[in-house]
Image (tube, rainbow, N blue to C red; front, side):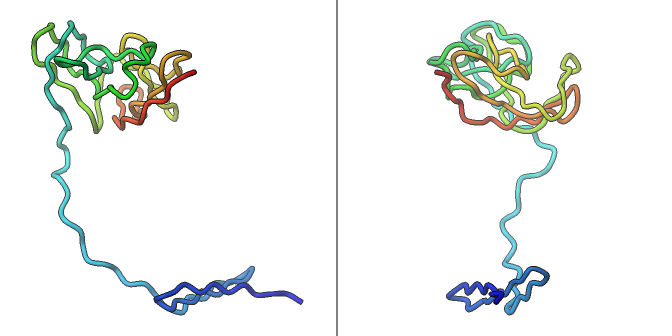
Amino acid sequence: MGLTPTLLIQPQTTVVQTSATSVTVVTVAEQGPAGPAGPAGGSVAVQGYVATVTVSAYPAVAAIAGGIALGDSAQAALAGAIVGIATAGTAAGSSCPVQYAGELTYNGWTWVMGKPIFVGAGGVLTQTPPATGFLQSVGTPTSATSLFINLQPAILIA
C-alpha cells in the first residue's frame, strides 16, 4: 500500500501533490510588482575616516575612538570594529579612504580562488584563519589580484 503525500498550503488554497516521479501544481504563482530601482552599477562603497596611526594601503582597518587604526585579529577588543580596507597609504591625522563593500583590486595580492579572506595580524589580509583573538572574513577572491568585500561578523576565538 503506497501512500501519495499531499501538501496543503493555506490560505491561498494551493495544493501541491508529489510522488516519486511527478509534481502537480494546482495554483500557479504570479510575478509581484517591481521593487524600487537600486543604485547605479560600478559605484564603489568608500568612506573617509581620520587615521589615528599611519596606515599603509590595503590593510583591514578598525573604527576606534577618534578615527581608524589597523585592524588586528589578535586583539579581541577589535572584534566587531572592522569597517573595511584602506585603499591608500595615509599619515596619522589625515583622511583615509576605506572601502567597505564591492570589488577591490591590488596587483600585489595572490589570492587562491575558493578560500575566504580574513583579517590577520596588524590588519594584513590573509587566507589563513587566525589562531587567537577573533576570526572575521572580509571577502572572497574574484581573481588572484581582486576580492569582493563582504564584511562578515567577527567570531571570538576562545
